[in-house]
Length: 257
Image 1 (cartoon, rainbow, N blue to C red):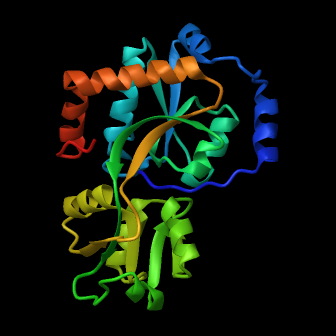
Image 2: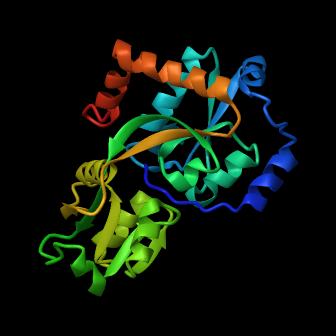
């Protein structure tokens, strides 16, 4: 979900805001209420958090959470899928109104967007095939490491100097690991464990000991305190009345707050 990394320069942000004609201090909540729809973005390639099913529908934990938040705000949710490495740029360019796509809350991202939540927590983990002999971060220095393009894991791996290949999403990562084109993959632990379990893919894993668990948040454009408050209130009420737990158990099988 998510764990992602996107670097946006201030000039790009300014250009995006200018292109959309957003006035400083103008909150978008009233506009959304008038339209009756909130456009929610995600990659659609991160099962079981968000993915496209056999009926060509985007389903999973993230769209369920996003749709319930929209409902409690009196809005319809329109799900938009887009490439992860450009998803914040699309938000700033007004292509959608929020990102509910397992996005890790980071200081870097918080400089260009505002976050609601977190709505779940996870931890970075390294996955290999059984018997690989890869059991530590030091072992990754001599192997090929697979990651999703644009995730925070990619930046972490580059900083450590690993030999990496990048891919569009988790399904592709798992296939590359299974076929031996990479020796290890780095991903949020919950999504990878559940996805490999669903396809009966054998694996070994160990957690990254250098990082703390992280929170996934809902990203919106800056300068919208009313929208942020309304979305947070909807999320809080879901967590209080049992709806959040029901959604988590349906898609994840556990409470992941």
